[in-house]
Length: 119
Image (tube, rainbow, N blue to C red; front, top):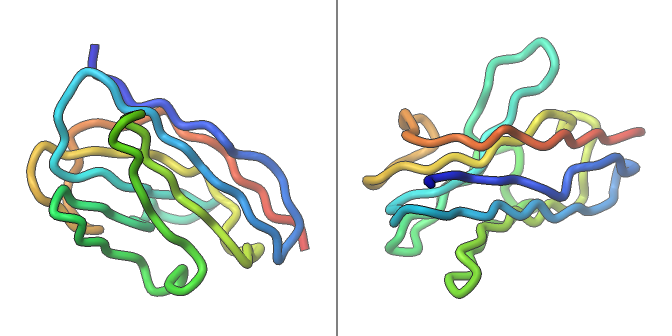
């Protein structure tokens, strides 16, 4: 069964850190990444990792977020540091069977995990 399962969401104070894992199972992926939808805003791509190890980040998180993958565990991670109130959103793990970017349509989606940053 093909699925993506996110975890790690929660509430933290501004300036803090969180790490979001996404466990992938049932398929071989070329591209996997994180998207988010903040209250009242459109969904946006946050970070992408392609199989060739290339990455893309939305400008607002550059220098604060990193993306990595543990191939042995088939788990993707989003490390979020220096969190700001604007980072409050539901974060979704998504994957595509071919190379992708932040604006690409994705083939598979997780159910999301809520991140709340208090100032």
